[in-house]
Amino acid sequence: MLDTTPPYPSPESEPDAHSAAAPTPSSSEELWDIVDHHLIRYGGSFAPRLIERARGSYLYDQQGRKILDFTSGQMCATLGHNHPDVVQAIHKACEGVLHLFSGMLSPSVVELAEALCKLLPPTLQKAIFLNTGSEVNEAALRMAKLHTGGFEVVGLSTSWHGMTAGAGASTFVAARKGYGPTIPGNFAIPTPNCYRCPVRHCQDQCDMTCLAVGFELIDSQSVGSYAALIVEPVLSAGGIIEPPEGYFQRLQDYCRERGMLLILDEAQTAFGHLGSFFAFEQLGIVPDILTLSKTLGGGLPLAATVTSADIEADCYDKGFLYYTSHVSDPMPAEVGLAVLRVLTTQNLAERAATMGAYLKAGFLKLKDRYEVIGDVRGRGLLLGVELVKDRESRAPNPELGAAITHRCMELGLSMNITALPNMGSVWRIAPPLTVTQEELDEGLAILEQAIIDCLNK
Ligand SMILES: Cc1ncc(COP(=O)(O)O)c(C=O)c1O
Image 1 (tube, rainbow, N blue to C red):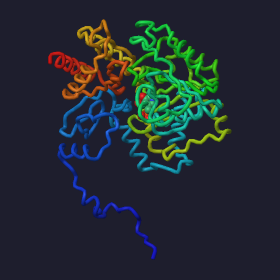
Image 2 (image 1 turned 30 degrees about the vertical axis):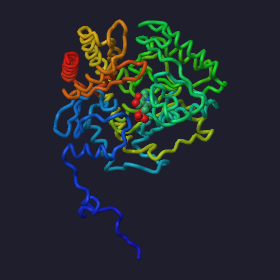
Image 3 (image 1 turned 60 degrees about the vertical axis):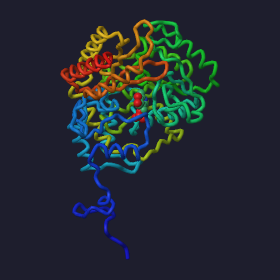
Image 4 (image 1 turned 180 degrees about the vertical axis):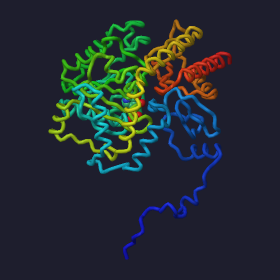
């Protein structure tokens, strides 16, 4: 006989045997024991606190200790943690629809497409909504290859574009060794890092020799099948490197001369972090393809690839396929709408410029007081502070960086440090755009205390 009971529990039903059998672990030791036994370590060791709650700029661990979050999670909690409008959008989606067949659309996705494209220039009017930065770069690279008919992709030598095959092949800063061949036809040009000139040519003032030399090298290796160049406006994982004035225009010229599309990866820079809605507004270019991720979902997995109607039409005619389980999902779209609404109504890009200038001035004061701070850079609320052994040699100081970062966490400040060979140790600072001046003061005070404690050890 056909069983007509629904295959899910009714709200009144008793817990099933599985949930009854699984005890709820309570003590921190028990949970860390489970971590040791059952979690794959995907990026070194885990941060030493279990976070139970988050609001605004703060995290709260299991013991209720407060941690000021200077990286807005993984640079995603644009409006701060658990912003009420984001929470409300999630509730709205729960009342409406969470997930659909990938070929089906919801009003939230359509409205998000319109809201996003209204903020963009006429050549960026077609969007696809996915979940992660890796995915949208993957989609952008596929579109560039299909549209141009080429396959060669150029990136910058300290770039990070994601973990999937295509995005990973253009990620040069880490995660390349030990996984076999990457996709053929991927090349790197030197990152224009004027604090550590990659061609040992300039100091503190990049004259873009690295760009010219880089393209000479690529041209000599190319088999004549260029598709795209992919670049971040500020190389974040690469140590918060801001290419010099005029770099992006020159980069676009190099691309046009070679028939390549310029893909701008604004995972960390879009939606206000640099003090404008999009970074490209400050760079004097409009990319052929724009990728948006982290900051768009305000902490939820939402990302977009945006391009021109012409490129989209050509790809469509050529049978473009980018079908994933969560493409056009309604729930993150609802959240994206809320994020855009709050950003625009509260003018948060402008706020990021003001708060960023205040924070940068605070770091510069610390630089005046501590020789180990070699450089302070970045703009808006995406800043970098580089640690050195001494100002003269500029030798990186990863041991001190790790010690101060650890001490900051003990004192209640979460900081993120990059410490990769040839790059130096750089704190990447990206608080939520809603951060207050008092919170910035608190973070600066904790950082100074941690520096003092570690230098006096
Ligand atoms: C500039 C940039 N692009 C792409 C990515 C990849 O995004 P995701 O981790 O969401 O796949 C990152 C992640 O840090 C990033 O910083």
